[in-house]
Amino acid sequence: MNPSTSDTALLDLRGTPCPINFVRTKLKLEQMSPGSLLEVWLDPGEPIEQVPDSLTMEGYQVETIDDRQGFFSLKVRRPQ
Image (tube, rainbow, N blue to C red; front, top):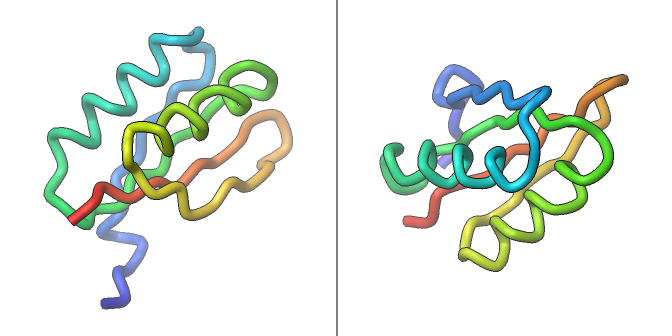
């Protein structure tokens, strides 16, 4: 399966503090269909340090983390 970028939902959480950004990411993933990809925009510092680890511990698959100059793009997949 090779999903196109149009299948990717976007959640812009820049300016959202921890742990609210993790809670919002998890809620969004739970609303998505299994196997879906979610792109989350996170601030540097605590958000990008905490959210990916928390998602991994919850069983989500973090696929990529990209530094986008001023924020990070995290792509996470909901398990099948």
